[in-house]
Image (cartoon, rainbow, N blue to C red):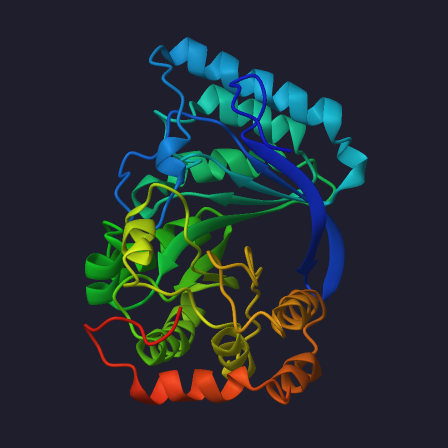
Length: 328
């Protein structure tokens, strides 16, 4: 469900998620807010999904209206986990005032909640208050603060993404979240701008290892081309190609940690893709692995006989840094 109204969330949908070895029903919600304070990431389209509300009371009212809509359309008994996103950061007081967070906590009492925020907005007081707010005393609630680290390489994060924080900032925020009694979910990004396929794969493999000590959950996002972004501009010039699904499977298979991945846009020209013939099989396999954790699914995908595997291997071996990508 997609909405451009401040009386409804920007989007919401039910699904499933793997948690503690179990597949559970999950609700994903994207609240429509005033947006990200940084607002400079090269691949992010949410900068165009912001409201123009300036009055604080109106912001609270708009978030309450969206929450009412969610409760009316998604009965609490229909999900055990809720993933909360906004147009920016959930723990940004200017974007989501604490009164609104209190109401959201009350609505999701007893749930496992994953709430996304930039590192600079992860502070002890709001995280602790929200964690205590979702606790109904039954022992079924848990809070995970999700942060888009994207890569542990500061140079890549600055030059290829323009994220606006460092790996050290992330480590500090992760420590604050844990001291407040919350877990940490880390989002990493495969193949931001300006990297070859090989550089992107190597960076992701290294980032998983380096981020793991500070993460309770790790999710690998495969870069997609969102409209009106800098990534789209380079893509239209033939200067960027989304990652191969082969690369995603190779990374997941090589990781010593369980890493989830939702191949959004998989198989489409603006999303991670192979040749078109095997894409559906890869998207399905990556999705199934993220729910089951069964590595045999990944091994079977790597044994796929599609001829585009040769293309992918050639690209890994021959694509040069600071040059146009070899394939589309």
